[in-house]
Length: 297
Image (cartoon, rainbow, N blue to C red; front, side, top):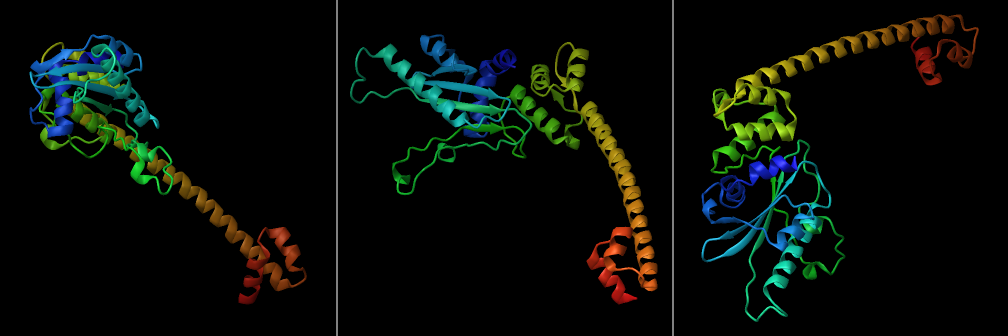
């Protein structure tokens, strides 16, 4: 997935839209024209730690480093990993730009990492360092918190990216994971690159089939997905009915056996020529049940 992630998310418009979605609700605050590929030693060292994409943002006023880590599974140590990425990046920047010490009043570039979680299962790992480390009573004020900038595409939250390709990708994943198509989306056309990246992430064969049938341009996807979801739901209903029938038969048999045991026990209690222990052993009813049965005769 890493190669396709770099191809899709590494496109300048798509890259900045992820940050605009998280920070500015899709407003085009960050501009793709100010992005530059960061090819320095810093990238070589940080990328070796498995970060997906690093880009430099330089608009004449600010020099920042933006990082996207695309994550397909829940990693309990993700908070610590991102802290490591950013710490390595800061120290590399200092070593590259200053001979000995950072001059007084020097401000370093901001380094901001977004974790784009594209998995289907719920993110149940730490989102803050305080959720990962033990903080002993009395040390709360001294503890340095670190928060994960996490985008989860399998929740009910709808992100606004302000860019068609990433918006289509986000919405496709939500549809597939929730198995639900909104009526207004049935004839919606999706970006073809977003469609393919959604296939790479989900391994949904229907997406691949639609992608292969449409060689260029935007693609209508939702009606085919809606039919697939309906078929899957119908199969689930039929399976549930079958299991219910089988369970009902099994319960009926059990109930019939129980009734037979009770009838035999009553006959033996009426004759009164055997102890409760002997009747229990013969018919398979416990002693408490037999005592209650005897009282009712």
